[in-house]
Amino acid sequence: MAKVNRQWILKKRPVGEIGSGDLALVETPIPALGPNQFLARTVYLSLDPTNRIWMSDMTQYMPPVELGAVMRGGTLSVVEESNHPDFKPGDIVSGIAGWQEYSVENGGQKLPRGQVPLSAYMSVLGATGATAYFGLLDIGKPKAGETVVVSAAAGAVGSIVGQIAKLKGCRVVGLAGSDEKCRHVVKDFGFDACINYKTEDVSAALKRECPNGIDVDFENAGGTILDAVLENVNLKARIALCGLISTYNAKGPVPGPYNFANILMKRVTVEGFIVIDFFPRFGEFQAEMAKWVAEGKVKHDVHVVKGIENALSALNLLFTGGNTGKLLLQLSGEP
Ligand SMILES: NC(=O)c1ccc[n+]([C@@H]2O[C@H](COP(=O)([O-])OP(=O)(O)OC[C@H]3O[C@@H](n4cnc5c(N)ncnc54)[C@H](OP(=O)(O)O)[C@@H]3O)[C@@H](O)[C@H]2O)c1
Figure 1 (cartoon, protein in one colour):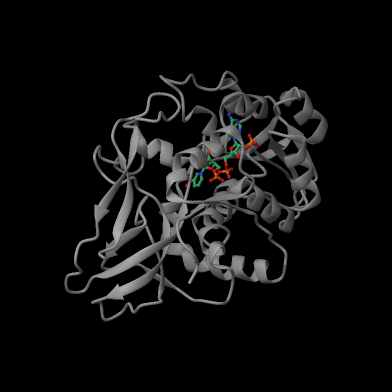
Figure 2 (cartoon, rainbow, N blue to C red; figure 1 turned 60 degrees about the horizontal axis):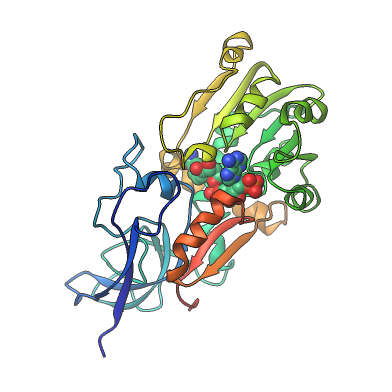
């Protein structure tokens, strides 16, 4: 019997939180392979806050996903059948095959087997790790002895940022949405302190935990967290603007930071960055990060949800704080 593919199709652009009719899970036949093509079975699908941006038509760094198209998503797949001379059954390939169980491909990045768990390529050794690495080191430029603040500290990117900042000799203060997450980042990832932004006065807590002020802010959240950071920045502070997750589900235009003037008064540098700009330097990151991981100096969490039918409820965990570490959807078994 011919294999059937299941795919999530974008039907409507969500307004606010993603609604049940915005995407649809459909079954489609798998087309026959042409020359130089291979059939890839998706093992892991990366679920990322930016998926919500791709569903919208706001100004963004890639074209929005078209209505009627398969939802875009980063993937790790195994080759099942091949007409391509460079890809054979059993090869592991990373790419952007989207929210579907199978895809017909003509290329991708082949990954080695057996060196690290495959999920590491979707987290600490993939785009997540690269975001933390380049965002902190190239944009934040931390120096030993400085104070670094990281929002979404128990998340995929934030947890790695904090550990790199510690390796560079900084004081590291995280922000997370529960006492349990705060305990985790201090105990397991070595942050010096962590503030539960849902229960504390964030500005007062930052004053307490950053007695010498904030030199580098790795900003994942935006909104009131960014405002509290701006109240506590030092002269010549750097803000590595990585994400604004507090605004991705907004129904309309979002106001800028209330404490915008402090950027002027404290001569702060705010620089947004997108990890894809650093892909030409991926080798540099992977060599150093793989060494840190092998030496146990950088740890990471993966949060795996199984089954393509659970894609939307899983994605929502990013916005409710239900995930700890890199959120992955597992669509089929590892080879
Ligand atoms: N610039 C780039 O190239 C790039 C690449 C990857 C990711 N990013 C950005 O990096 C950030 C983190 O992404 P990730 O993939 O590592 O996800 P993640 O941190 O693993 O998950 C998102 C976390 O954000 C926190 N959060 C949700 N709503 C929030 C709010 N209103 N205020 C404060 N925190 C909130 C939640 O943790 P709590 O329980 O702590 O609230 C949630 O677990 C996102 O802003 C994302 O867009 C940027």
